[in-house]
Image (cartoon, rainbow, N blue to C red; front, top):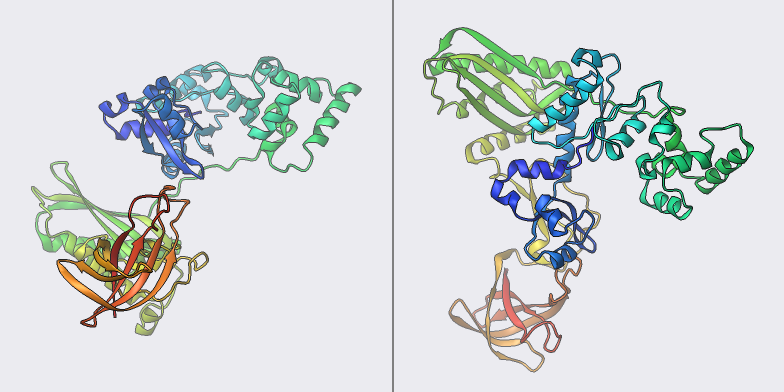
Length: 518
């Protein structure tokens, strides 16, 4: 199953019809600038192609809309589709970045035969807003080749001669790397039939063809990757060499629920049910050796409406009392209506958590569970993004030298971080421009105005020169010269001059104040 337009289809489902009517391209940042990974139909008509630089595409279509691509989201969606594809057979595997492999051995008759199964595959994907091409063959390599380069809905039966039916397909149908395809084209091999003739796949007893196969083997010797060895890929397509595939196995989430004999309409019995579910969830997590990081509580009302409450935890936990306290704040606004008849608790995110002696206070302090519980309470009360901590970031520009992350996440590696001169304790959110009224011959301001007040500079230290990040900014970005200065009142500031006179990257250099020194 080949989802040729997976990324575009996902973007289309999340956008409006008006947005899809405009020429649009999905892009990724590269060392040479934004590069197109996919384009919608209007973008293709305008000339946008995968692999093209965005600047080149906009030369053809100035109105081309650029949207950031989401490779991680595409892979996550593909994993979910692999599990969903087990509706046709119990075994499925991923073929990144946009394909699925399903072993339908012994299952085709359940859907009325192989033709009916392939038609159902295309119809089911279309119902989900996804464009799919499907093919069926005795080997995964042959099915891949037919889905990508063969006619739609092609079927290769076990008794058919694959070399005869696939001979006209291009050598790219072997799932080879681009450099290998370039070598084969230079050798004059463009079709599978030509490669099979040279490699002796059809008549292995012929001495000249065996010699030709040895010559090809020597040319691609030392390449361990199957995508770099056309002979290995051809043997896999013909079924002479097995091709290992990693199946996708569904991993059910820990889930507990209670179906109530009488609908609940009051808060007190609902709290008791949640407490019982929390204890049951702890037992389920303990049996798996895991702890919950995200919990979802679903309340089914008699009128059919489902109320959802979610809690994200700072660290994996199996403490029933802690879980109950967190959900107690989320149930204050629950409207029971005619009553709640079913309550379900699910751990949508869990992590390994070894068994430990959690009854003693010393053990709780040792493993940091007390801090995690405090952070969870603050998060529930203040919001999911209210509790963070700063961590170093590999950038020599002051405003980019730190980032924010969840408080209990492991700190990033120190590799790549830079050692700086002493920085002020207080930095402004944004550097504020200052008006220099008088400058010394070497360019240092002696008098400047900031926030309506004129200040006299009595002491200065510097400069500390910081160059722009050329790999991230435009070529017209200017360097900075930082100074520590003190005014006549004893206040100290951290200022910088943006650019140099005559550097060819702008007009007169500007001055900015970025921090307050102790």
